[in-house]
Amino acid sequence: MPFTANRQFKKAPRMFVAAKDMHYTTADGRQVLDGTAGLWCCNAGHARPRIVEAIANQAAELDYAPAFQMGHPKAFELANRLVDLTPDGLDHVLFTNSGSESVETALKVALAYHKVKGEGSRTRLIGRERGYHGVNFGGISVGGIVTNRKMFGTLLTGVDHMPHTHNLAKNAFSRGLPPHGADLADELERIVTLHDASTIAAVIVEPVAGSTGVLIPPAGYLQRLREITKKHGILLIFDEVITGYGRLGTPFGADYFGVVPDIMVTAKGLTNGVIPMGAVMVSADIHDTFMQGPEHLIEFFHGYTYSGNPVASAAGLATLETYKEEGLLTRGADLAPKWEEALHSLKGLPHVIDVRNIGLVGAIELQPIDGQPTKRAFSAFLKAFEQGLLIRTTGDIIALSPPLIISESQIDEIVTKLAGILKTLD
Ligand SMILES: Cc1ncc(COP(=O)(O)O)c(C=O)c1O
Image (cartoon, rainbow, N blue to C red):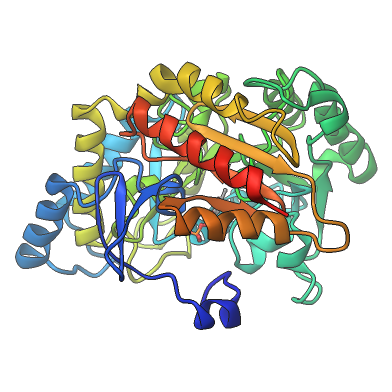
């Protein structure tokens, strides 16, 4: 099983057999409140009729069309809808089937863009410590989670990392953006000084680092990164696989921070998690740079059998329609004050060393058990599941990211259950 303690799972399987709106149903018939939108992806909740219907209809009408040298209308319709939704300056879309594939696609676009422009010496990719960019080789190379990297050889060469921004000594229990640490963006200047800008293709960061345990950028940090990348002709890639599609209370993290990257990486919420699909948005400058040479030639040698798959495209369109109809891409902003108050009420409970929040994302960081990192949070995860609540843990951090349809009383339910669990942890 993916990212699972396989032997532990086999001894006591946790199986879901159905889902509706905010709840899963377990194999033994219990209801579990979804505190994580599946895996940060079911932003509109579960089994939404419009999406279910669109998938069924599309499968009956046009199940598959070859992705290479052929097209079908829904992929173009979805691309146009996405261009309308993304910040001005992101004007073209490449479809993939996952966040990991979106990351690889973005990195390849960045390298190829410089090459086509005649700046082929720009081959270096810069990521960040504790970054998560999926599990393929490019993604784990620019990523910064040691467990995801250490087993897999030398990875991509020519990669460097900026420091992460997590600083409990200065920023613990911040509400929203932590006040300290914008200057960490200046580490990029140091890296540029070390390698020279002429060797650097792109910088990739998650606007809010999710999978590593919700690291919220210090106020001003992303703006500074944008300034530095622009100054040196380095492409800025935002990996919005988690922050995209309403998670922060804005359509994208780029909107929340008022920072437009050159390339945006998305997946998950694009289809509400129902059908695998990702989308990479690029600027007109990047797109246009490739559009040269004889017209019968392929401009960019990249793509997947299922890029823009008709059923996935239909799911994407129905998902965006559902988000629009129900105002879900901004609902997180309305709920954020309530969410913040509720989460921060956990301050002071046993083992809690930090609570942090932004939009409809939250994290509760626990003091690890001496010599047994991850055990305390995993035990909280198991207890929560027994008590009808789905949470997610990485290391000793509990991460929360409920569907954007959550009610205020369900927020209270999450926090009440968690408070009870925290009091009983070893
Ligand atoms: C920021 C980020 N990038 C990439 C990925 C990888 O996405 P996938 O699991 O769909 O390959 C994830 C998954 O959680 C993610 O959070």
